[in-house]
Amino acid sequence: MSGKLIGIAAAGAALATAGIEFAATRRPTMPQDRAEYAVGVPAGEDADGELRAVFLGVSTVALTDGQSTIMTDGFFSRPPMWQVLGRRIRSNSARIDEALRIAGITDVAALFVAHSHYDHALDSPAVAWRTGATMVGSESTRNIGRGWGLAEDKMVLPDLEEPMRFGNFRVQVLASEHSPHPKFTGFIADPVVAPARVAAFKMAECYSFHITHTSESGKVRRLVIHPSAGFVSGMFDDFSADVVFLGAGPLGKQSDEFRAEYWSQTVGALGSQRVYPIHWDDFTEPLGRPLVAMPYFADNFNTTRKMLKQHREVDGIEFAIPEPFVTIDPFADLSAPS
Image (cartoon, rainbow, N blue to C red; front, top):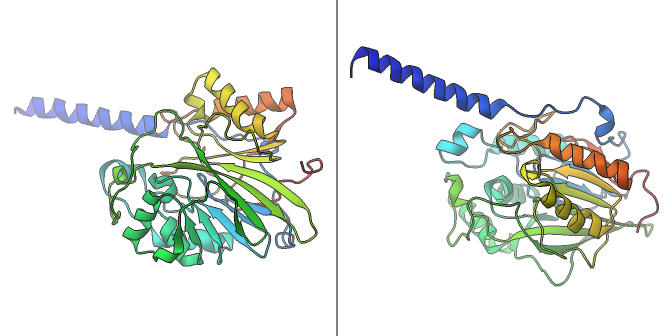
């Protein structure tokens, strides 16, 4: 190839790389109005027997009453995009340890895994081992645990018929659906030994979690952690919850009709008063404060925020964007529990 052609090819490659980088970094800016964010609990008020929540990025949520702690997913490694696209991934022990340290989490009774994609299940065995948690997930998720080396007696399949009890928490696991057009569908038949490609983390079954907490004083609180922006029609018809941690990505890329039905089948069916959007953040960026939204090519969080604002104005349903490592009372200032 002549020097001129080599130069043209190099310039073309540089432009293509620049275009990819530009697309990967164009994203909605997070709101500057602090009224859109959840208000943290003052120091000293987070272990009084009442229910408290901490959002830890993507769909990782820890719930505690100071006596027992349960968690969803436990994803902290957040490998960068270049690694996700072109290489093999594995849990990042330093990032897991740092996240648990900052959050003050040492002992977890149960770790519920929403499905087996890497942004939910990659770190779950490592987090379960560090915290002593029982990992609750599909057989595919258990194969991720087996590849990591988690003991069989620390992994259980979810009970879809009866609530699972851990301390004062009662968790009903519900069959759900991923957001539309998921990648890497199917099931994991053999242990996944890291490092492994992202495609090895096949989705398998998807779950949502209806959680009832009864305090020592007898106060009953009900909330739902719904990790993915999909649904099974009628899945919440027999349940109620004042609060929903609602999967938001990639909701902003769906049709108006889908978003309306999604809301009706989740928040509407549950009769919820407050929504905390989750799974809106770019999980190829490190867990930090503040988090950044997914790039436009993957989602448009501005569209989701617009939907939330409309429901606040029309239906009176509150919303608040949770920030990582900030302990909140998810039921603060709500009317009497349903």
